[in-house]
Amino acid sequence: MAYKIIALDLDGTLVNSNKELTKATKTSLIEAQEKGIKLVLASGRPVKGIQPLADELKLAEYGGYILSLNGSFVLDCKTKEVMYANYFPDEMIKPICEYAREHNAAALSYDNELVITENPEDEYVKIEAQINNMDIKKVDDLISYIDYKINKILVVGEPWYMAELTKDMNEKFSDRVEVYRSSPFFIEVVPKGVDKAESLKRLLEKIDIKREELIACGDGYNDVSMVKYAGLGVAMANGCEDIKKVADYITASNDEDGIAKVVEKFV
Image 1 (cartoon, rainbow, N blue to C red):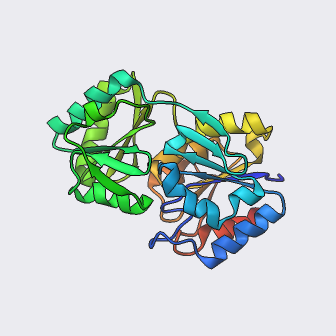
Image 2: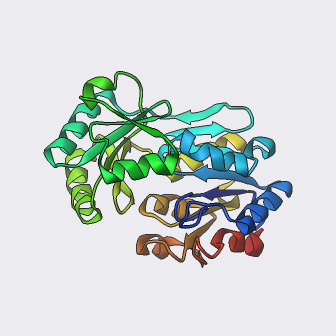
């Protein structure tokens, strides 16, 4: 199969444990784009948290895409056209934020280039801000503050506790929103029907590329759908067991240039 497009999760996949894009991985992906391969950076991060990597990989020059917030928002890097957007249901902001308060978990969302939360000192809120290179803004009441369209709410906390809450939140809210973990300490709450696979499907239809021509690489729970959907689904050696079960191929870890090895083998 001649592959035409590669979708890449970021944390735990494209970048190493230090959140860095290694020279070998960068070189391989630039060379792939020179051969006409398109890249999609597919992450739970907001656009601001993805843009530096998109710039480093020259996606605007080669015509790549950003799939942010787990697929809620898809951007053409060259034209700046919004290819797809799905917004959080307004009526669900209050119940999700209240649920987080009642269960002593921190909730956050985004306001342009800021992380907004009632819990700015929470260690996992700080991790999210650091990952995306965003400042944190404390708000007294997240529910009343959000009077504009958002794409997701993130609930954060200790990994063991987030595992419990994910199950409980799905039982309570899965008929109205999607609830899943993107990392052991992050619970993504996004509009119904939003995940990376669904957004990739919409993007491929617009740019006339078949799913069989897609390589998708990931390591986490929120990557399972796109790895399963792709013509070639790739799990990282450091990935969770759920993703390894559905992958067609398991590459080296993100600290061993696993993505560069995929490009070398299949592109």
